[in-house]
Length: 255
Image (cartoon, rainbow, N blue to C red; front, side, top):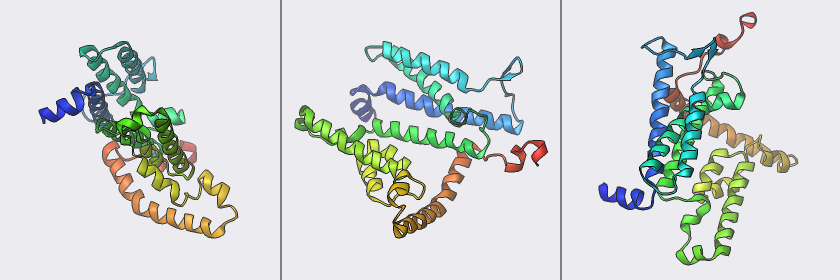
């Protein structure tokens, strides 16, 4: 294990990235535990308020992210300082992305259905960073030989082709495959050649006058969502907690 760590993490200079990922995941887990205890009314924890204003943890998260990011940029050489700033950055990113849905909606949707997006973004981020730590590089550059790397034209062509695959997958409504396809191009290729989702820009543009393709797209999306939506929601609920039931979120006059 020590040999693997030195050869694959320390020697290539990936230790700060590993520390950032570890602090990111740990901060997210601790934050979710604390907020779920606050929600249940257990433990010594409580919401932070100043002058009647609820201070969300995205606020200290932004501060830590700024400090860690600028500190990491200022740390020219890998060392103790770079590692410390990497940990600070990971902590800040964990706090910020835990409330990603609030930033996206500009509303306190933490315990609503929309709040599930925060958990999904955290999982995707952790997975992508883990792939980079494992040796994957964006747009398939890691698949190039040494001679191809020295050929700038080959590198540019590889990046352009894989970027096109990711863009096509995104246009077909397959956001997750497009995101992971940036690191693992084969996934983006699958998303690019398969049927588009019914509400995607590709379907609206190219399936408008093709009723059979539109029907196949709707049927495939229905079966896919029926198969995977339940397990994905249960995983999100297990990690982040179940959203409030809809009536509890409505204003008193609309109950």
